[in-house]
Image 1 (cartoon, rainbow, N blue to C red):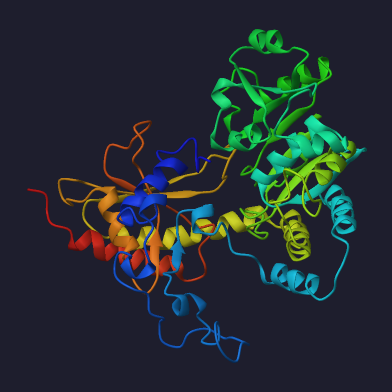
Image 2 (spheres, one colour):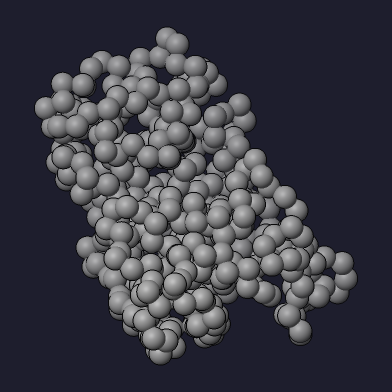
Length: 443
């Protein structure tokens, strides 16, 4: 999903420049061993980390060095390709506690749903489900809409032969890679553009209306009107808001708006387990979603397994996130980015600016834009990103301005602080300074 719709780069452009930085290594067809990565094999820095493992894998305190995989300083954002986010110690402890006993998974999911409803201020008649990520929530949520609790239909999908519903209406501007999970259920997506087209497209085969929340500004039918139209025609509306926190209030905005199902990623800014997501919705739909997923067998959602440890960790992460002081966190991000800005702006021809849109929908955070005069520094953003990626012992990832839309006048890379660890900003600043100062002067 796009990192910042208002910014000059997107999640798609990041993946493109990421692939270039790694010499194409990360494309599926060109995957190679870690020892062939740009900059050579990874060796652990002196000292390593603390470990309670006495022998074998992990005993050095640096499991990635043992595996020969290069870890990353993340100045880019909450990308699944980089591991999403880092969990808080309390989340890891909750996962450890969840591992200490056996428990019926269905019972745990029902209890977790009640806790989610409490934390996320859901309206009466709503509950939640911890899924194997937001994409899994799309799959099992739409399965629930199609099958209800009919065992025959649950076993039959994605073959929709003889089933009463088979279509979902989506605005053309809301199509995105994750609608693959909707189509995975066998559903046919029907594209519309206007309110009139939306209403005209509703027919007896229509199962639901789908809203991609981060594209609210692009579609002609907005988030509040969309759910009203669905309910006027006795249809459920599903809102995919996967990357749309913070602000925290988004966790209850859409269920209280009336959306029948809403999903959020668990492993982005909420900092839950990367393989976890949140599905919120009306109790009957959530019950049927659970019938369509693991631990139930012969279901379309059986591969979307979520363990007792992820469920416990996800709930703890959600509890921490709901209680967090987002203003204080944002202030911390500005401070970290400011330290990078202070270093690189000492270089002639380099300037910085901040991009923060309080109304931004997806991946709501502050970004530092670092631009340079191509007449003084003869480097492209891709070249800078490639050199950052080749940094050792840890590779450095930032965003690059490659999109034609709102492309900046001068070459630019962009850095976010929300997935940095303390001290990462110093490493990024010094390495960027080294790269920019050692660049050849423009001819």
